[in-house]
Image (cartoon, rainbow, N blue to C red; front, top):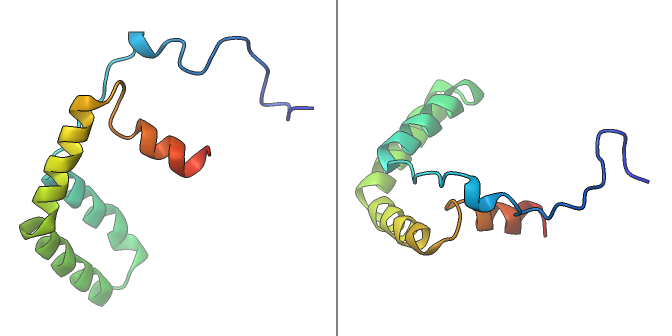
Length: 92
């Protein structure tokens, strides 16, 4: 039996996929700013300084190449860029 907050349905998971807008890949700079902002309360000032240095190094080096790869993957994807990764990580 299903928990009370779940219910059975005959509608397939991706039934309405075509009617949903595809989410844009966020800019790398925006993602890194958010990462630093949301991680700051969870670490000490010293750890945050180290994290910031690592993020800046990542942005200058492999970050751009990985961002471009993500954008290219998104162009080939049927739905939003994160959908398959999210599904693979959490639902399989």
